[in-house]
Structure formats: structure tokens, C-alpha cells
Length: 422
Image: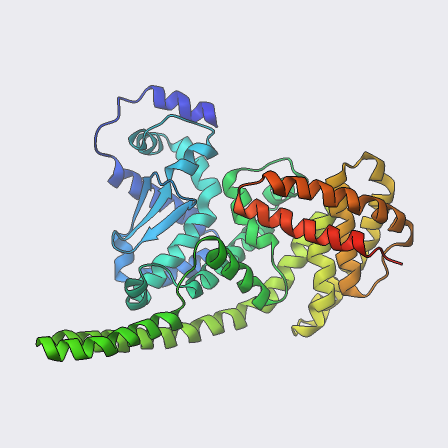
């Protein structure tokens, strides 16, 4: 992909001070993303809702560089979805291009644009959900200056349902990713929450909350926004009457009333959205991903999807056939994983072996099955090595997400090494 991007850029004139192709590129990207998204029921449903919002017709899709970690973002003031050119260049393994050159390359070459759309479409869909939220609930977004955390609960579930639908229709990309034969920065990102599914919607939302509140500094909830506005209104009433600005106070009061109506309406929508979609979707996704992981011999992922779901399936009102399928596949995953470790242990490095044993231990623990008898000595020998491995990784890592991963593993293997199984 680097060659495709680079060869075309060499034919372009020197970048101008402005981006003259913004409008044309926006039109093409908006149309080409729509073709991708509309090939799924989830995408068509989203577009049906967007078409009812007058502002959507004027929405633009712009390419700009941002130093932050966002692959894309929606700006309600500009009514635009921005794609971060920093990550576009990483995707194409290209460097040294100005913002104007990136815009020109994407505008002028259909193949380059198609490659971007082919892999970035779930991220674009996520931002379209935010656009719709801002159209429908503008008072909160304007008050907080950012999306409320609740908006992310809807956006991620919509994105994951969309990914699931697309992967079931054409699972080749999922298979390649699971077996480790293909990845790119967009695919790696969009599979993140999809692979982190459970049957428990509270755990799913908690992962989202932790990501935004602990790593990104926090999002304001709709409840907090209303409380904040109420506190400010109480102070402004005194100042308004003292300074002769009664009209301004009246406008603020009406704005608070609109915010409360939006809060109530969105809370009802979100509750129904999860209640109506979650149980069937989560069970089907876990069975689907776990089944493919099992076929591709990615046992840690298979166990996380199938065995853990097996343990919790009875609590979520699943249909009998879904419950039976999860329990059967969960049991098979544990048996196959144990056999795989016995056969391949000599060819595994410390981390690979540790992750397989960890997945087996967690799966056996939550399903009430005994840890495989023939692997107990191997576990006792491996866990201290894994503890040292992750301790060293943690001591030199700067990235917060990787530090969290190394810390979680260090804690797990430290606890396991201190309390060997009988």
C-alpha cells in the first residue's frame, strides 16, 4: 500500500496553502462510505435515522492531521467527521506528506480511497452515530463540549453489531486476523471491543467507561451535565436580577429544561437499545468468534469467548439452542486447548505458554471444571517465569494501555505462583 500512495503523490503539484479539494473529497468519501455501510442492516438502520435529521445532508467528511490518539472524530460546530491523516499515513506506511498532499492523493485516486474505506468504515460508522446523537440531543453536547459517556455506550454497541454482521457475511478478514496472518491499525482497533464481548452488558459498558474516564481524562455523564447546569443556574439567578439580565436567566432556565428532556429521552432510548439488542447479539457473537478461534487453534481467544460464556449463559435468558451451543463449544474448547498445550509446550515461548495456561485456568475456574491434571506441574514451572517476564515488560513500558495489560498479567501470574493448585 505504501507504493500505491507514494507513486501517486510524486505526480502531484507542490501543496498549496489551502486544501482546494476538500469539498470534492468530502463528497466522494461520504458516498463511498455510505455504499460500504449500507451493505449491512445495522448500517441501513443508522442511515434511515440520519436521513430524518436535516443537518445530515450538509455533513462533511474532512481529512486533517491531529497529534492525538483519535482515528476520527465528529465536530458538531463544523458538522463534519474528521479522519486523522496521521493514522491514514500509518495505514499506508507512508511518511513525510503534508495535510494538503494527503487530501490530494485521496481525492485523485480511487484505488487509494477505496483501500482506506475498505478498512476504516467501522470507525466512520462510529462517528456517524455521534453525529446523529448531536443532531438529536444538541443541548447536552453544547453544554459539555464533548460526547457524554452514555453516547459511547451506543456508539460502541452499534459498531460491534455492525462488525459482527459484516464478519458473519464474509469472515475471511476475521480468520486472517485471528490466525495472525493479517493486521492493520484500523482492523486492530475495530476488533478491540468486539473481542472483549461478554454476556454481561454491565461489564461491556464498564470497559468503555474505564477507557474514557481513566485513560482519556473522563467524559461527563448526562446526569452530571444536568447537575452542573442546575448549580450554575442557581448562581446566575441572583446575578441576573442584580445586573438586570432577567432575560438571560430565563433563557438559561429553558436550556436546562431542554437538557433534562434530552437526558430523559436518551436514557429511555439507551435502555431499550441494550435490552432489545444485547442478549441475542452477544451470545451469537461469542459463539461465532469463539467457534472461528477454535477452528484456527487460537485457544486463548476461544476459551475467553466460549468457556466464560458457558459459565454465565444461564443468567441471561438465552434461547435453549443458544445455551446448548455455548456450553457444548465451551467444553470442547477446554479439552482441545489442554491437548494442544500438552502437544506443543516444548515449541512455545514463555509468554505464549503462559497465556494458554492462563486461559485454561480462568475457563476451568468459571465453569467449575478441574484444571487438567497433566498440566499442573507445567503451570507451576511456567508461572514464576511469566511473572518475571511481565515484571520486566512493565518496568520499561511507557504506553498506558500496554502498562495496564502488563500489570494485569503480572498480578495474575504473581497470584498463581504464590498459590499453586493442589
